[in-house]
Image (cartoon, rainbow, N blue to C red; front, top):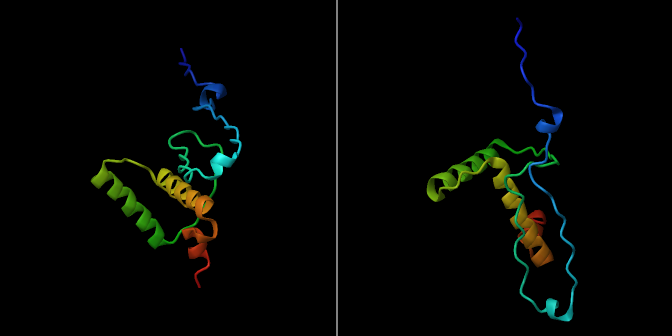
Length: 113
């Protein structure tokens, strides 16, 4: 008698792992213009990501990312993968760019000759 293996359905394999809600943009009032700078938005963290972007890095850059990941694990007890580390770094840089504009570290580094 042949054995039949029960395989998961496509719905089981491709089910959403988190509900993505797009927040409404807050209204800007006179009081909001004097408010302190906005908090850094949280990166997505450990959820299933629907979009993919390939980035090529040098051997030295990859080694630096790995060293940072290992330092986070050994010195701070944070077990993060390279993707999460990069998403966190991108969120910080973009928040600085949004808050500082022309004075941001991103603009300064990109305009260095």
